[in-house]
Amino acid sequence: MISMTAEIADRFLSLLWGSRKGIAELREISDSVSTFFYHWPKSKGLLLEEVQHMAGAVDIFMGVLLRTEMGRGDAKHTEKETEWLWVDVDWKRGATFGSVLRTVGLDPQIVVDSGHGWHLYWHLVKPVPVTLAQGAMKVLAERLGGDSVGDPARIMRVPGTINMKGDDRLPVRLLRFDTETRLRFSDFDLPEERRIESPEYTAGEMWRLSPDDAPKFGEGERNRGLTSLAGAMLVKGMNDEEILLALRAENEVRCMPPLPDREIQTIAKSVRRYR
Image 1 (spheres, rainbow, N blue to C red):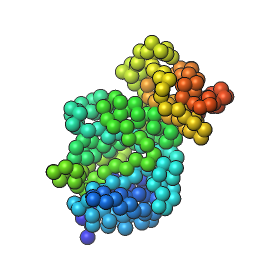
Image 2 (cartoon, helix red, strand yellow):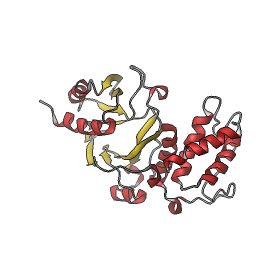
Image 3 (cartoon, rainbow, N blue to C red):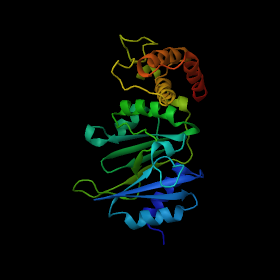
Image 4 (tube, rainbow, N blue to C red):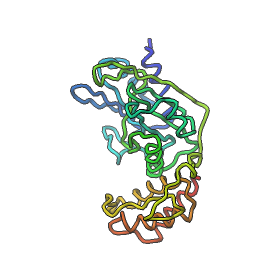
């Protein structure tokens, strides 16, 4: 007989991953860390049995993105596209549930009460590259005062389990579960509210150029890093010309060595279809 814990986890994971095929990572954390991998959706039953068995004894997390290789949970072995954007907001920072939702103005399709805050998930009409989504999620996190949790290997709590952190045992609850609504990536374009004035850079006065001491993108990281920045630019409401100008400037500051301009133009063109 399936427990309420497994039923809630099943609803959540089935919407999050759907019929996509991959490797689901489940991580149990107590005094030690145990990591398990399951073929999704083929081994969904085994995964849910493990969640049901361990809930209430340990903290249970899952990888937001499916993994591409058994036993490998690092960023290099995750899906390259995502149909979800997600943010983690800690209530200790003074936010309330209502204020969080009003700040974005776009209702998330999944809301999880983590016990100490909320995990918000927005469902996209079509998948976007993870590198593009990372930039958008960074902007959303800044907007909401949330944590930057958009990295590909991110793990989040599983609804239906227990948050064991601290002295209290708090339920991880599924507060909102919308299976019908999907949003366009361009729906997150809120330019008037996102406008940033900067004396350093004036591409539509919406982008603050990275400082000289910002972390650099080396060989093998440059395209991915600039694509992530382009995702943030889209969410800030910048137009094609502004994005190209800003990427050219960021290329000089962040890339070691800078990419050829033709590659910058390719990155700028590639993000247009997600408007």
